[in-house]
Image (cartoon, rainbow, N blue to C red; front, side, top):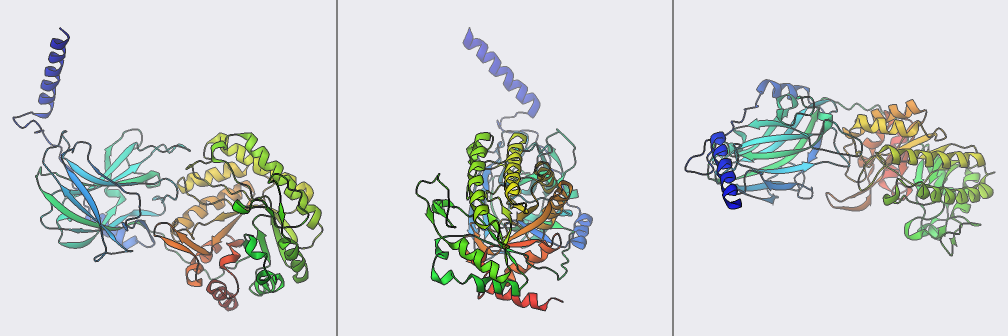
Length: 552
């Protein structure tokens, strides 16, 4: 009896499917969905006329995390990718795609293959002065299929979460058959809702979390093809315009045992060289630790006891003496601690960090508190605005972080009422408007923080200086102003990247100049990380010296 019932259910499902999708002798013959043609030449021309600064979204150089996949309705298709190095439009390579259709979709949708790239941290924000996208495509006249760009959107964008709940499509039915390279311009106005009905049916570029490029077998052909993609860009109407006024006000120094050698004993000369180019302050990143040197106190007379046997160097002692002689200022970093990503919602973790910072602060105040070189405090533990691998986007974690920063700031000011600095990293875990709101919510609970130096991340190939930084600086500066904190920028004068693979090195002045110029449009408080890559004799420093001397 159970077998009979199962047979009836199966047969009924078959007839329902046949009635819905027009079954024939070919068991995968459906009434296919027709794709719209999204090409709007007038809108494309408007983008080109108004386009100024652009941002690369995907280089297709081979190091980006791009998913290569068959469509969910296309199990019989095949797709593979390969690097193209001898005929490219940008960078070091382009992405070649080989694909095969079988004309055997298992749904009313045509079969398709795709590549997909979604963003998390270090995201672009397509909502900045938005016009559209551009991408280079090299097709072949015999290619089957049509080009479809999907923008994946999270219209809710709840802090700490990311959900693909809307897809917007653009379809071009001829570009894959073009013989040779063509630059395809895609206005945002040409995208239409494909699926997802949880919110507005119009695209909101700032809530886009990624894209998918489909090759769709609209004509139901059993055929193979090849196509090459390169240089996908965000096109904006923003036009940078820098006033030549940028100056560095300070430099970070990250202490390590290398500086405990005779080569680095002449702090008087270093300070004098910095003052000659208008820099009169150094920020000592930490006075105890950090990392593999976590058992070192960089000053003598340390009472630190949590690392077992503590090694003491007199580097800070010598720096203070030289600073006094040269009328130079030092801002003292506290303990080189770090947050435990698994305990960001645990108050006890912050209590331990606070207690250690209190010990270091007491040491510094007792030893250097009366020095005229003592100019402020720096809370060493760095945080960011992102959620991966863990972060403070959720309210509970954000509040605990704010309470911790405030407790440290209040304590050090009770010893010496000097300015307190923090330097979070711009990981861009949210669109710029949400990132700004997050910083405002955080800083409104930290009234003893005076300066927030935002790390620009431009030394790690993770940010576009002309597009990302103006967008995020605008929103975060407003957040600081609303919270009563001075917005400042920490530019990175080193270069070390994973994609592309660039080993650690100092930047040249030519590479650094634009970072300083952008920062100067938003603040006069610009520091530099760090002295290790920006010192006399380096191109970065000597180029800045020539630039500084040329200022009116």
